[in-house]
Image (cartoon, rainbow, N blue to C red; front, side):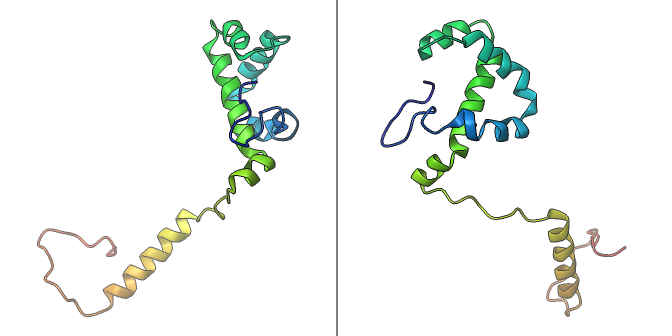
Length: 128
């Protein structure tokens, strides 16, 4: 009910959010677990978004957890990913390895003859 069908995209229920991806969201954001559980308990039996909004009016943390979990799980759904033709990026680069490679590259450049005049008062970060 929080994400209606639109432009060929499924509802949050049709995307099977509660069955397939909610655990992934909670693994990534365990800090919202208690607020989400409270939202689910308070909203049990509600049938419209307006009823959910009214039920959680005085509990913005529960409302936030519910909407975050629904939206996050929705966009992790394999059906939604396929319909959006989304291709997640590959693995993230290991920053310490990249930093070390950059230092090695700078060292190789430093071995070349200088093509500029050094600026006075500036220290070389590669010199120990």
